[in-house]
Length: 281
Length: 355
Image (cartoon, rainbow over all chains, first blue to last red; front, side):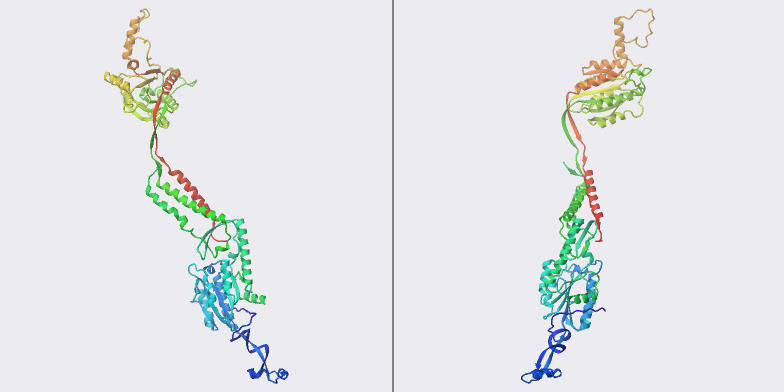
């Protein structure tokens, strides 16, 4: 199973030891200051020089920050548009990403949580923050079995904030972001307290304008609406412009949260995420 | 007024709402239509196609219901006459004019046709030139054969005249009963305008006294004008004028004295009695109806006859026109076909995938 690396640039406030910089003092290599031995410092970290410098002659002990675990949440959009097959299967990409993330998180010693939303938060797929590998790896398999039936929308994403851990978490928001602009704004605002990595699953079919002439009868995967499209150069130009504008809008929205979107337009590969975090550092 | 042959088919009109209610089949599934820019032209095209589908269905349904305008009669005042064409179809009409057939000429063309053919052609020309007249046609030999009731339809008249030429004529000629049949044609008809019986024959016949009386009454009562076009061939006797010695009397020798006026008058009377043509002519002249006979020995006589009838035509006549039932479905089928072709074209332009 393929693993990827992720990192954060904030301090975890968790108690559980892990791989990320934390605020908890303890066994670590990150020196944060001194402390009197009498106040509960670790005698193994006794600092002779600091003790001699102390005007009151107390024994001084070095204090280090402990590396802590963080909750990593996969917040997945399970609406019908995620299951539309284009050149690639977005649903398969989502499953692959889930499996890969669950594995990477457990390898990193972090807590993994899965929240899937269609019109509601899907309780049958919900995994609260845990380090149990059995639970985290199984969710990918269950996800594979539960392709959306009917035409669910993604309204549940707005409630997902209530299901997230209280403390700051790394949230992978996996969606195709095929939602109205207002919805995206609202969603990102609801997730503001967390470190959100917007993972945008797109298919070339969605991001490229159909070539040639003719008529195209389209049906919306979520609303079921029908629309006849008369393909012609004027429309194709407008379409291209609309797609460019949408990409720009998504970038603007995500920038306000501090992280650029990770746009995956081909089949998912874990290295894409690794590269994303390296570029962000 | 508009009526339908199968009104129940109109129930199918309800299905015309289908293009608006039921979405098109086999659309391409698209994750989010919000990605597409708004395009009023496409929407208009979509509505146009729905409208075309609805109209095509309506047109087909209406056509299936079989709309028609029922048969209608209308009367109008025209100028013309009601004419019964009474055409002799006896065997003698199948023969040619005789040795001097060149007596009847049309330009420089020598006429070799039978008398029936020539008569037929002349009548055809005559009726073709008078579209306002109402024609009826009776052929006769030993019986009267009514072939056409009164009609103003030229096509029917011409067809009846053409039909008169089929086959060979019969042996006998009963002109009295033919005239009776022609006269009775008018009996149960409202008097609407000039009435003419146009008798075309190449010979006459005796009429029994009872029938003579009846004919006189009939033609007077019905106010019928009689025109006789007498197709006179070489051996036929003239209708009027002095006669040669009555048949059967020996030819007087060169030394014999010239016949006196009384003798001539007596011979003429005898001829009027014995020669059917002369007899008829005299009979018709005497019964007090408008009557004219034309000896069709030359084209000019025929022309006179036709001109005479043309004058009569100037009288007002009430025409009853029957417009036949009109089937209105063919144009609807055409409309439906055109709309369906449009829809088929649009379907052909449709793409199954985004590629």
